[in-house]
Image (cartoon, rainbow, N blue to C red; front, side, top):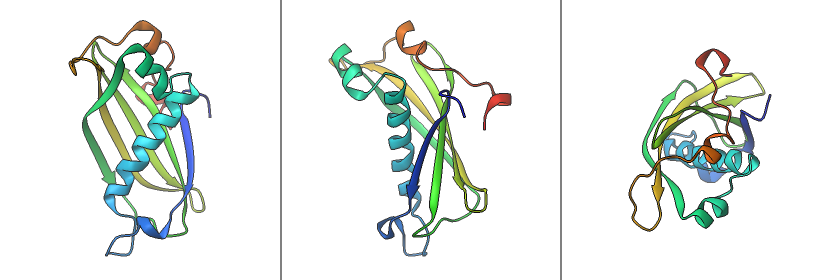
Length: 142
């Protein structure tokens, strides 16, 4: 696995379980955010660096497709990578895997908009930000 792909390992806590006995769908969104932030930080762009520039990423949309359930005590790996950059937006993808049986639990994506903190308005993504991330083509995705 190269640095283009972020990897976060976690153990599903009982607090993530919903009334149906499996991981609540909202928990996946939280894990997506945590994985994205950890991957960004590992590439030299922690939240503090964006804030120092007066910039931030905001979320325009999430999509998630669930294939299998996860349960309390399961070990899960969240893989994440950047799929593209456009003038003011970027697509980040995710794959949730249970390593014990190599089951893909879900795939997901987030569209991020790059914004000016002072105005809250979209702004072009600077080259220095784009250069920190390797954009993975669909053929290279995990």
